Length: 85
View 1 (cartoon, one colour):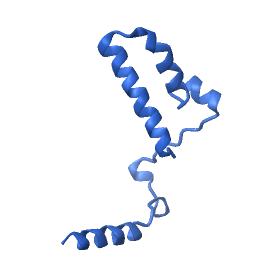
View 2 (cartoon, one colour; view 1 turned 90 degrees about the vertical axis):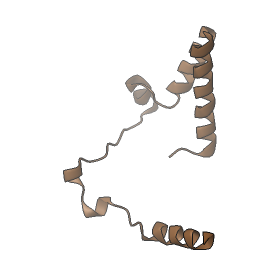
View 3 (cartoon, one colour; view 1 turned 180 degrees about the vertical axis):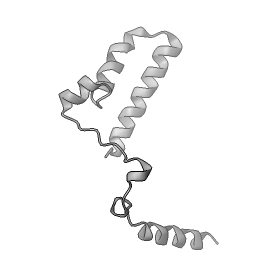
């Protein structure tokens, strides 16, 4: 769901947040609030973004078709491990 630039933006936001609390830079609070709102931090933000949260089913509710086929990923992993040897 998140691209590399999204993660960069969130990392920058985390650093601003850290600086705000560590150094008492409360003038950064409004910027942090705006940045986290863009990613749906609160229920109001998610409503404004029309975002829908999908939850993971309970363990007893998992069906076989809910589990992705991991054979391709396992094959790539095994090939990478074989190259390292």
